[in-house]
Image 1 (tube, rainbow, N blue to C red):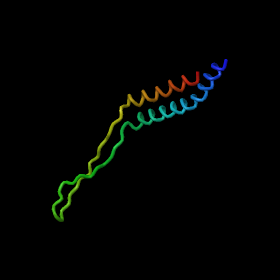
Image 2 (cartoon, one colour):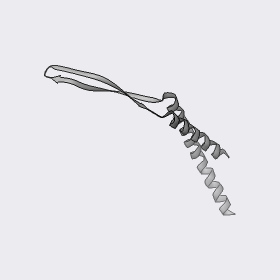
Image 3 (tube, helix red, strand yellow):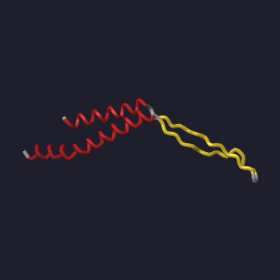
Image 4 (cartoon, helix red, strand yellow):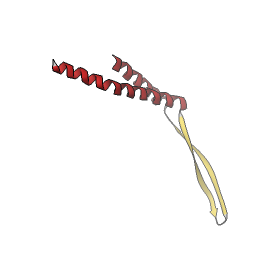
Length: 85
């Protein structure tokens, strides 16, 4: 009888952590699907000769996989549904 009680207490204490993980996966997945990529700018020197300095700003985009974001969100939903049941 005490073994049954131990298993139910373990499931109850793990459930809030699983729900938090599921919510985090959903938020990250939706964020990836919405934004799709992030960008940053670097400055590169073209000419640096004495008093003459010429540089160029280069924009770089790092795309996320939209499918990966959707899979994260669906994984979060699945985990949320599984912890409720």
